[in-house]
Length: 543
Picture 1 (cartoon, rainbow, N blue to C red):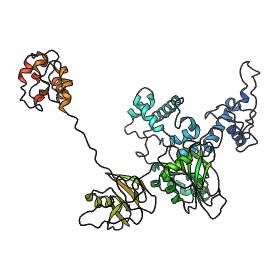
Picture 2 (cartoon, helix red, strand yellow):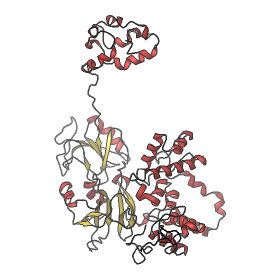
Picture 3 (cartoon, helix red, strand yellow):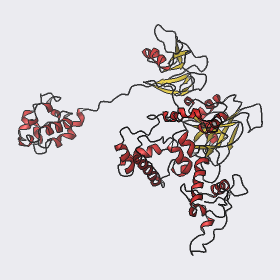
Picture 4 (spheres, rainbow, N blue to C red):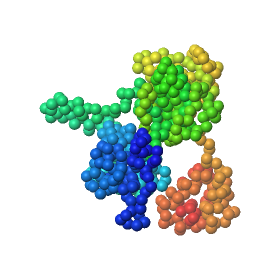
């Protein structure tokens, strides 16, 4: 728990690391005051947290870290300090502003539990059980969001489904009338925040109001030059270089740098080439570009896990980066920022359609492209104010298009393969990139419109083939003579229907003579009706 790279002479600083001495109290044990392991209600750990907590409290925790275990007041003070100050999004902010239990887990132990690496699954289960037990005892019927901790929602669902791992959570699910844990079920901006502004607050001095208002809004958001909408597929993290989680050091990512991008909205179009890669983690938009020292230019960085083969990525996926850089050892999800002027960090996130359309998949902002980056021929639909995706889909559906491109209140285009024709309608060619064919694969992130691709209905191969019945024939009547039952006369649906007949009258079936069954089933009888003729025709083994 002591990193030599984070000492009192480095930034960020930490307590000095040295040789750990044997305890003078008990032989074969280490001196506790030389170790920075987890102590206190929040398990304060690592030399860099001990020095910062000690500075905040006015106590030298570098020389006496064991005070966090032996002095109750100091133990609780370090816990409050960590809760209110740690991470880009503090645990306090996760609860008050985001209503996100997962965010607190990520701030406290995210490197080991968000997601858990297997060896810490038991810790995740223990934490979930404690949370559910508290919710049950306090009769709370809505759990906070788990979004801030990767895979915590999945762990919770699996844990509850097991019925034995998360007993407290299973009980909470069972005793709660309308349990909820997903943001889609519970508003993330809870109405419960409004009662704090009760009529009694009007009697307070106006000077007290400003002191509380800053804590209710994120401090990082105003620093962004522009926040990308969810349909771009990124979440804003903060002002500075994107940072990966590491328990000791600040780790940035390898990157591809693209220059002369005038605004942040053009950066997603550059990095869209790499969105499907698991190594791709996000983007940084810098204005002006601090990397090349040109104050007149802006830059866009597409960020990748450390040791990603970037030259191969460019050759396979395309793009013309100015610089291929290895910035640090960062890998995995972006968890915060290293503050830096004129740079904004965004982590990759799922694309969120501005409007969900049944039968069509949202591809992304911009024009629709095929697998060769070609645009499609189109029919223009006249639009009015407020005309958007659902109206565009309704207008295009009769033509069975590849998809459509809609810009709210501006345009609606029904898209078709190159050279297609629709009777009574004018087919238009795109200005550039003519030749789109086949399924829509990408969007080009240009303009203010949105691309939707048609989802063809599923096709079902016939599964009730008579060719499969001979394999089931011997099981239908093992006691009767094989020569009395021709496989071709056995209906394909009998294996599923026979048990229903048998259970309808279990006592009558065994009284029937097995030898009589074959004589009642004439080959000319329609197979589809055979099982429903009479329960008495079913063989004993069937019932």
